[in-house]
Amino acid sequence: PIDWEQELDTEHGVLYSECVYENVTVKSRAYIHGKYDMLSVTKEFSADTDYEFVYKLKGADQKRIERFEYTHSPVENGICISYSIDGLVKYTGELYIFSDKKMSVSVSDDTVTLGAGFVSGESASVFVLYGDDFETADYKEMLKKRQKEVLKNSEAEFESHCEYWSEYMNSCKVRLPDDELNDVYKTSQYHLKTLSTKWSVPMGMNNAQWHGRYFAFDEVFIVTAFLSSNHIESAKKILDFRRKTLPAAEQNVSSLHTDIRQADYSCLVIENGEPDETPGYWNEHIFQNASIAVGMWEYWL
Image (cartoon, rainbow, N blue to C red; front, top):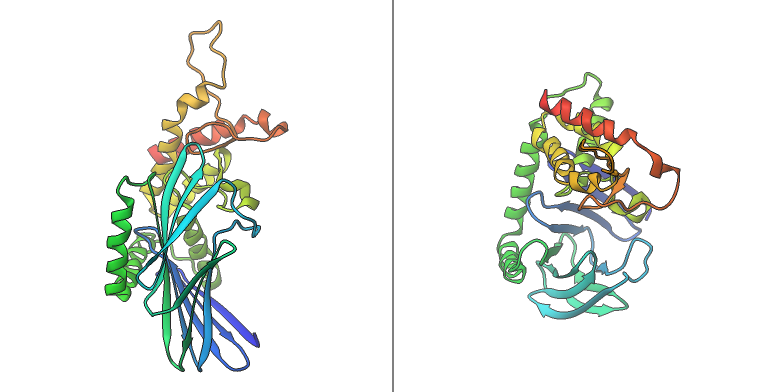
């Protein structure tokens, strides 16, 4: 690239970029739908060019995902990856990788490639739809129906995403007097939302950030951020997670010679509340219990 720039639209949850090459400029728009699991990437080309969209069935380290088995079959304008993977249980699911334009499709070396030639001013979108049996038993029918809706009117899906995201962001009434600080604040709110799971909010989803595990002593800051920005339900979700996983915390404390109910939350846990820490001095941390209590108290207030 000769030049490159990127913009995050926090009001609508959309990422824009422009990449300038010697013979073509490629403009991009990317978002993950606020209401369901779909990645959308749109490209617009300033000149005639051949282009490939590449989706890798690999980890962040570019290595094959362990215990991940899959087959593939064609769908309209794309491909369906049917997979199984071992976790706490064996999960099965599907990825629909498709475009709103006719493209060549290939799968090789755990990589899905969609390619086509484009003329000046033309654009194309590629979508990745996710679904598995952890979410819903009839995920296959759900994905088929969703793909038809996206192909019927992809811009309507984009508009519904923007509407959802705008409503979420504008429920926050905080406005800082300094424009740059205000941008930082909105970006922080954006990251909190994008990192929120159905359980709590991990530090990150990737392997460099503890594989998406949950830190109880960090959650008090996240709870405070949600409460102070009027995202009350988002804060409640974190506290519900700790309330529901209290039995796991009670397992960490001996009940011998006492009738008092006690609990000690592990500093690092997975979705069911069980500890998932490597050995180290952090196993002796106890202040995460105070963080949970403070978060509960602030939410109650």
